[in-house]
Length: 350
Image (cartoon, rainbow, N blue to C red; front, side, top):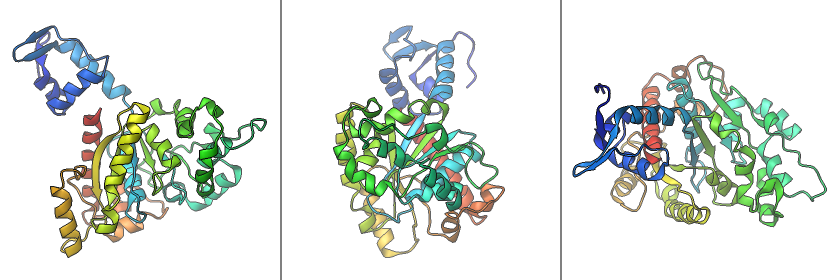
């Protein structure tokens, strides 16, 4: 937007400069103490100095970290493949620095990004997030074993064009840990509650990234709540069928209650439809219902079809480009568009 030096701008002009809606700018003004003060409040609305707004937007783009959890109470809905695809496209296509936090005991995101062989070596050494939670269950006279520096895996992804994705790997041991966390004594890692463990441990890392994507287990237990504790928003990948969408209202209700409990906003970014089969009666009917249900989060425009390219992308195979990994039959532009939509929704939420 080309404006003369020293010109005053209103909310509509700021929204155009930032590439977001006017409501988003209004939210920034209310929530962000660094938002410039207006030089005047006119009948048409507040006006601001252009140079101050330009500096504010530059700082915002530079310093903001978006932390988003991916959740569904049902397994096998494409939650992990969606998380990994977003991470790789954010890095490879949009130049963003991304941290993937794998909280799912199935460790699928971990093995997709670093291979099962490399994960096995890390797991043997205790360099996974399971150790963080296990430390909370140790007697007070035992030293903590979690090593954040050793656990953080840098430059992951088998796609050579993806160079700015890091990973905090998961472990099968998280299955045993979750049920025991409710008995955790307070004070470990200076955390007063079990849901604060991840927040206290990884908080120093977060400013180093543009996006942090958290692959949550298929439940709303304490490990998932640890992911939500550091999240500013969440998405729900789902197959458009009855069983996969059944738990969405429960997710919404539990996340809203938890957000109120911790005094933070955790915004619904939307539902990502996965494994979609065009022309299937169940999928078409479920999709129509979801689009008209005002109580559900908004659906992303791009939907991920059931396709061999997506299934094969779950394997750790070295390739040069994202086009090679996700195929040339329409999946690459679809996932790129989905990632671009994800960016817009994340930026609009804060």
